[in-house]
Length: 340
Ligand code: SF4
Image 1 (cartoon, protein in one colour):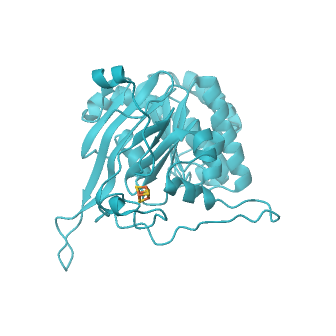
Image 2: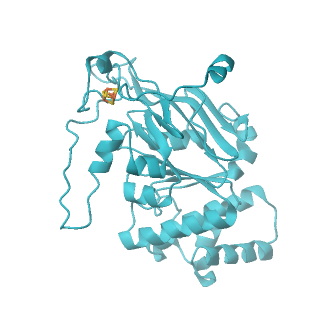
Image 3: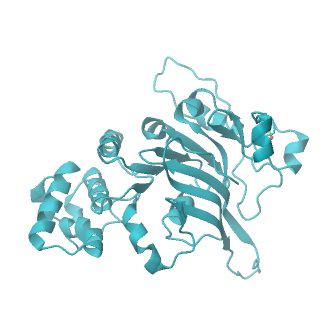
């Protein structure tokens, strides 16, 4: 399927991406089943754009990020990086791409080696790609430390000597050291205090402006996603159910699951009593996802058809794509249909 298009020059295009994990044999059998972690996901990201990827835990959003980074091998589908399919490249062929595609992970402490000084942690990706003298590398590191809000004299410290927010700044500096084009940010602020979250998010936004960076921003906190994203994709049980501009998602969501996620966001004003439609039931098992629409076991608008037929992701208005039988796709002009 052609993915919903990002506005602007495309950096990344993901088409029908699939990741299934075989289950382990247990005492009572169980071999042959598959975990449907990611099940036909398509989207694109333009230069300088942030795409937020949201959904409940276990929906496949972090796995999608790892597949794009090629930290895991996709079962099927393609990942086009600047027009070239990188989904089956060998590790050696991936090397130049890795420089352009970096990551910032959730837990800044466990993702930094505690026995290595901060400067060496940040310089490690750079050393993999460039030969440079210690003096030049030292100057580059000092600039980078200052750019992410750390002091040059902190370069000789170890990770345990930094606060959580400072450690995440180290993670960002490490990703930036090789001047990437896209950073996969996997829950980068969810382990931080709220006041520190805002500082790190603002830093990411400033860096984006300065360096024309793109982000795939994986998170479950909708307030954070609303602040940083240009467009937002909503995932449920391995599939994208809605993708649209931030304004469309937050002011006129079209998928019942997106509506439910937004209604669950707390309002920070005790005077405002929000009428909530709380989602009932758990997310079904990704080993045996429900037939038809995967959301039908929890959807307040479910119809008979939803239990049988899977709704395709269709464009319902300019830039807004939804997978729900209740929504009508925009009509293509006759000429476009004839040439499609
Ligand atoms: Fe609900 Fe049916 Fe739409 Fe699925 S297709 S979200 S079950 S109304």
